[in-house]
Structures are given as structure tokens and as C-alpha cells.
Image (cartoon, rainbow, N blue to C red; front, side):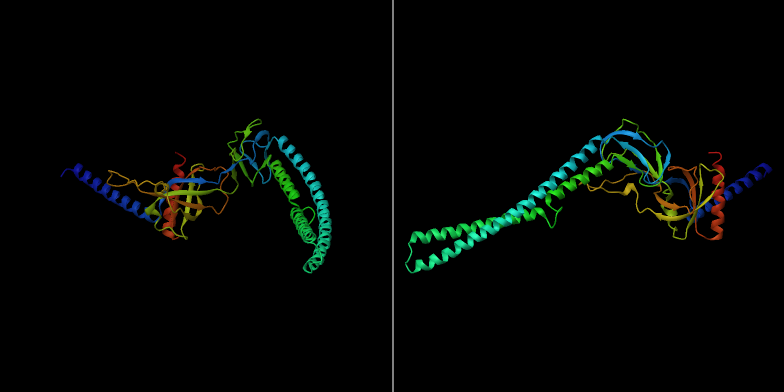
Length: 354
């Protein structure tokens, strides 16, 4: 056999053996130390929305500015809300005057009860005496009927006076300032003051304002997001793995990450959780029958599942929500940790190129 054929066969054997070794290594490492480039920095995005409507008269921040909790972000025209507060204060004063009038009416009602009670007592006594005389045929039937009518009338007047007093006392409440008219006016004033406070929109926590697209004159609508706010220290890392790669993940698993923005650098991570679902499997109760997925592929695309990771140290300032990364997970055993470190360092060096 010519030397060229021997050399060719030798190289083919080497290539086949190398291919088998590489495939074996990939299969093993994908099970024990899976690596993915589908990884991103995630963060909570708070949509700042005013609770009232109005024209923005002041914008107190700039785009990508760091703010502290309670710091003014923007101000809405407060003229009509100031007028509403003044109107509510006037209404409260009127309510106190009405309450004072109710107390006066309550005093009158008590006096009416006393008068009605005296009239009833007198009429009732007269009726009892005339009734006794009527039984002995000593008075006329007409006099008896008049006494009875007067007794019934005075009793009705007494009941009416008592009911009127109850109505007034119910409106007054337990003590001064607790009448229904005053409580309603105080509630209206409190709501007016609350709306006035909403004209100043403040930062809910320490964070960063980004994608600022408002200026003086912008119309702010109630409950409509107008600013994007990113809380500080709310970022974490997510990675999408093939579902078979996550079979051996547990609370003792650890990870290394290499960010695209920081080539050549590797950072440790800890595994926090794995999502329990993907959007493709989410069902909506719409009254329709199930839709079957059809595919002519012999081998289906692998389903990916999202896994969340946390950093024990603050994330580098060069990162932002959406930064890409490459991530490898490994069990905390020396051999797997060494292989994972080699893979992630190689990936971090390749980030210099792509």
C-alpha cells in the first residue's frame, strides 16, 4: 500500500477518534456542566404613572439619571387641585356650621319632647278621669270622645318629637365633629389634598430613570405609564438551558458567567430558581377546542427553560438590563468545577472577537 494511502488512513482514524471523543465530551459536559450563550442580565422595570391627569410643568430629572427615594421626578400643573382644596375647606366650614345648627335643632327637639310629654301627661290624666265618669254615665259621650282624641293626638305628637330627636342625634354622631356632614366634608378635603400631593411625582426607591421622553408641556394621563424606572440592586441573571441540561440542577449547583461587555473576565454566580413553565404551554380558557401542534421533523427542537441566578457581589457598572452573557453551571466537585472554569474562560476570551 502506498505511503500516501497509509498516511490518509491514519489521519482518518485520528479524525474519527477525535470526533468520537469530542462528541462524548459534549454529551457528558452538556449533562453535568451545561453551557449556554442564551443568558441575559434582567432587572425590574417600574413603570411610573401619575395618579392624576394634567400638564407637566416641571421635569426635575435627566435621562439615565440616578435618583434617590422620594426625589422629585416631575410636577403636574396644580392650579385646579389647589382650587379643589380651597373649595373643600370652604365646604368643611359650612359643614361645621350645619353641625352647629343640628346641635341647636337637637336642643329644640329635646324641648319639644318635654312640651309634648307634658301635654300628653295632662291629656292622658284628663282622659282617665273622664273615662271613669263616662262609665258612671256622668259625662256626655261627646266629652269622652274629645278627651280620647286629645289623648291620642298628644301621644302622636310625643312620638313624632322623639323620632325627630333620634334623626338629629343620628346625624350628629357620638361627639362634636363626628356628624355625617362634617365627616363627608373632611373626606372630600382629604381626597382633594391627596390629589394635590399627586401633582408631585416622586421616585419610589433608589434607582435610575431611563428612556426619558417627557418635557414641559407633556400631557400626563392618570394611570398611564410615562417614565421607565429601574431600581438599583434589582438586577439578576437568567439563562435559557435545554430542559435535559437542567435535570441535575439542585441547590448545591454553582455557576460561572462571562459577560459580553467584559471580555476576559469571569464571575461566580449562585443558582436561585428555575421557572416552572414556558409561554408555549400556557393555555387560555377561550371556549375553543385544543389546537394540535404538527411537525414533519424527525427530531424536534429542544425545549428551553429559564433558570435564574444571583450574584453575591454587586454587578459591574458596565452592565445594563439586557446585557448578554455566557454561563456555565457545574456541581461543586473539583473535576467538574475545573472543566467548567476552562470552558467559561475560553468563552470569555472569545468575547474579545465577537
